[in-house]
Length: 281
Image (cartoon, rainbow, N blue to C red):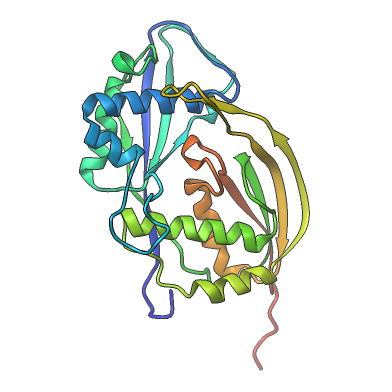
């Protein structure tokens, strides 16, 4: 609960599309996300320029400065296809986390997925059924006090620092912006005070390595970096209120290039702050 006693949530619709390869497919390492993002963009263009802009080039005419370009309301989850060969006639999956839970948004993605074979240069046809079950991620603090966590950076992550204050501020802002533009509104929290508490949490261990990747824009032909670091980082301190946000990062990603699937994190609780409290006299 926040200070007003209102439950905090973030809604995500995980979309899971099944495709059947119509020829042998090979997805080079680090390229699957770029191929599918390009195919999805072409499919949205084929629907209409307005629909394409809504999901790929969202613009806000209202709200505080700095929000002229809202975050895109989706992220791709296709890293399981990297360096993977799909034989002709075999089934593979293409996954999208959608943060706009309105039925018309879901239908736009289903429509676009059906067009990817014809206009998106992906030689595969859409199979059925399509899985689209909304999930409400609870952002309220758990009852148990958490004292140490290990973050697993599952996909290349781009952050200025591994320090917890930096990581958490990026994640909190991303979640709040997704809610602001596509959900229940910005987080009703004191960002400054919460950020100060996050800065007290200590980075006590890390084991990360750099991963190089890049994408090529179909529109301009220019290449852009998609690399970052993967691995683990351990944090210690009063992490209780931050735990739900860290767990939400599995769905939202954190840092730069999240649309391509970058910055996916998984959270492992290592220890509680007070696992054996003294009995009350």
